[in-house]
Amino acid sequence: MPDHPLPDCFPPYDEAGQPQVPIEGYAATARRNPARALFRRPHTRTELTGPLDPAAKLVPGEGNLAVPGPGRVALGQLIHISGRVLDEDGRPVRGAVLEIWQANAAGRYANPLDAARDAPLDPNFVGHGRVATDAEGRYGFFTVKPGAYPVPGGPGRWWRPPHVHVSVIGPSSLSRLVTQMYFPGDPLNPLDRILNALPDPAARERLIARQTDPAEVEGEWLAYRFTLVLRGRRATPPLP
Amino acid sequence: MSATGSRSGAPLPPTGWQTLGPFFPQALFRDGVDNDLRRRRAGAPPTARGVPIRLRGRVLEEGGGPCVNALVEAWQADAGGRFRHPLDPDWREADPDFLGWGRALTDAAGRYEFLSVLPGGYRDAAGPRAPHVNLAVLASGVMRRLVTTAFFPGFAAANAADPVLSALPDPALRARLVAKDEGEAEGARIFRLDLVLRGDPETETPFFLD
Image (cartoon, rainbow over the protein chains, first blue to last red):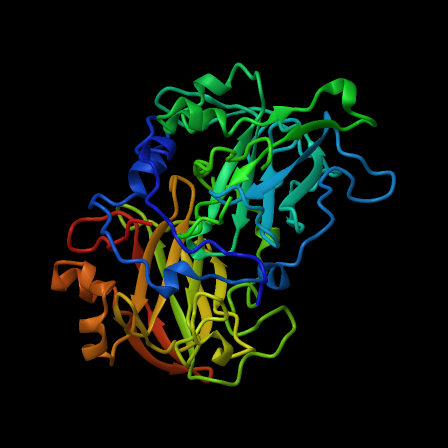
């Protein structure tokens, strides 16, 4: 059993900080969300608990998506994404499984479901990775900056800004998080209907990574920081 | 506290959800491993405790079409109704070989399947829990995971007393969360629960506020 405190209290989400549906021009949001209102349920042991060591089941890799082998380097801007996974009390979440997946620098996913596109595949870009957080809740990935791509279908075509999908499996079922990380200053960000599904501008801002001062970056990997806060706190806060 | 941190003691706002999108990498899913709740880790033998089950079904969207490349995640107690987690007062008696967590990636027909054991019920502060498996659906268009719970036939009295199932006001909705008994195959009892993310009032699966 872990010797550090785990969250045991999961207040309801602030709706303004969470995506609202349906989203215009994203038909699946209308077809795949219930017409009926969600039912309130008590949080019993099944909801409050979760797998304590998900990394034993989902085995972490190296966290390098851009160099699949010696001498093989993906095309595009090489970047490093790092940050911490915290709970609502600001405590680091240890041993969380973080998975990322993204389009390549041309805006194409290495996924058979993303076919029939002009944008090329990159044989040297893996497109997905998995790591576990350390004792301080830290994680890191080496990858390339993804390209933007148009959202197929209509009405009202729009483009997805460069983004990285992030999935976190934390200490409780209720702390589960799947989100997307965006890049600072991209002109497509304010036009993105998926980012804009969060009504609260501050919540949208939290999905945008911070660029590390380029003067401090050594090597060729432009660095970004992205903090993830999982739902959950201790019912009894620690003494100051 | 960290740069993002709660120096004031005020809680940090949780990061907002976004959709899984249509392109969750199939390479991140190992069929027969990730959807097997009976093994603590890849390569470990399945737990010997409990009645083996297969819980399967389809994830469907409005109009009855399949949800392809969706993740269904499962979490349940062991055969004795315990969790290996400090919030379970009986965690020391939990089955050490049982994980209780798994995920399945739906195929072109929207099908998912979990290999597990029949969960045990337990006493909770909220009331007596009937045997159940918590399920969450993540898919393109689903902006926040949709959560529901599978219950089992043959536990009518326990199901009627369950505090989560009782959160549904309508008996027809409660019946919709009880999986169908489809007999036995491959040494396991087979149960089916289709997850209708959106449909008419007679078919849509009830989902809970997360």
